[in-house]
Length: 90
Image (cartoon, rainbow, N blue to C red):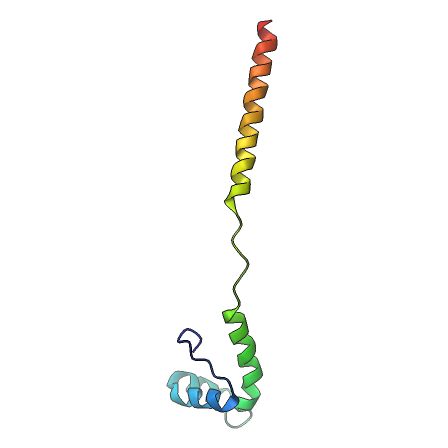
């Protein structure tokens, strides 16, 4: 439903969607849908899952910082090598 871009906005729409979806309706019916609970009971849980599915995750870590750390470490190592060889030559 979320991937199709049509999300139920009321318990009635959720009930209609469940009625059209055979495999989901069968699983929910075996779990008590229609006898112990209905779309009004499921709707708050459904809204929470939709919010979770549509909220973007954290941005991926930036590789720029790690690259600059490596460049800095290489420069420091190169300067150290130059200083060591310069002191050994004199």
